[in-house]
Length: 87
Image (cartoon, rainbow, N blue to C red):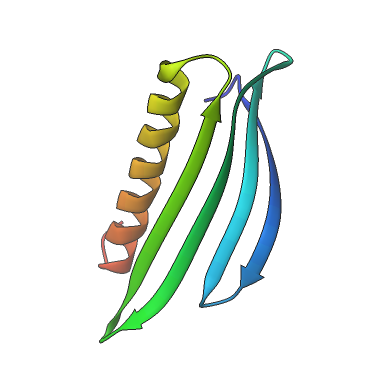
């Protein structure tokens, strides 16, 4: 969303294994949400198993949590399509 500024801090970067980062979304100087995301990657045959945990706190109500969920669902679907050879 173009009106939202994202502040992200990488906590753990272990290539091929684990990624963890904290993220805060701000619009017009107001904090909307803050979250902690953790992605665990595990070899699974010819592919990779992704275990993703996202913990979100909303300072503006349930709508913001729904928007964060929608964004993560879109991102995971896009990565899955890319990994499957789609664009």
